[in-house]
Image (cartoon, rainbow, N blue to C red; front, side, top):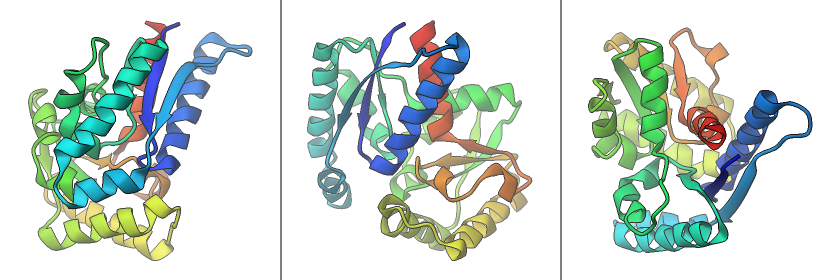
Length: 229
């Protein structure tokens, strides 16, 4: 079994999900008392969020690159960054280590292709929705993305940082998210990417008929499979 290096803490809420899902998948595949070989480096999300809000992505890249180097030196065979937004600096971090970093959009694209979906709605932080670092990865695999209007993007982003990252889950916010999801469905989305690792803690597949693709689940399961490959 390969050792998985996880860069977590963005937020710790979603990192818990990663750790749990990876271990459950390993146990499911191997049975008995088998569990994953994991090295976790958890950052202080306050520092990362500060650099995000100030558009200082180079500073964030320095922090995550240092984390990646430490994981590599500690014996990780490959790395996952347990958040969507920080894949904006994926290339910068990958350049600093010799071991591969499994991209979250690559894991997501695999699931979309298996479901024969080539047009999806995408909700996440304002960085993930507005910028192309995530959408281009999907487009490379023939998958087109639709995003909410500016007003709805702002609402989605505020709920993520003001509530979900703080462990706050409101029914009113869930209703708002589902309304935005339905707008994307009406625009032609055949599925919805939950492109923030906290969103899946708020809305579930049973809440809507349109297929949901929770990136934290897809990324974690892909990591578990990579560990056993």
